Length: 120
Image 1 (cartoon, rainbow, N blue to C red):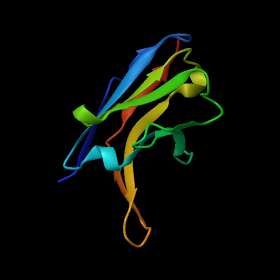
Image 2: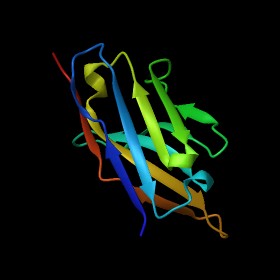
Image 3: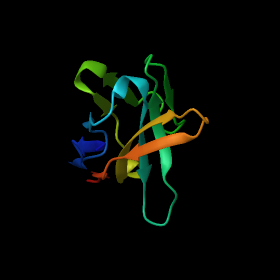
Image 4: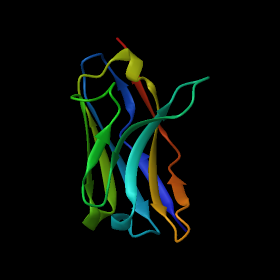
């Protein structure tokens, strides 16, 4: 059974930092693209950052220069270091792991989400 378990969310003041972790079990995470997405009420889930098995990274324009995604394949864990947090970063953050199957169909797994609130 595949599980992605996020941790590290919480309440932080503007300009502060948080580090999210995503522990994967039931999969060999180093063959998956890992990513962080976020969602606010009434809006679609949006990608924040992704990292391939070879550690190639991609970021949403809104977080470039402030957030850093990384992974430790030995620990089956992905991280999102968030610095310079802004109120508009407030959202539920979800961990994602995906791979392409033989038919090039995306096989997705999601965590349960962790709340990040940026407020003074």
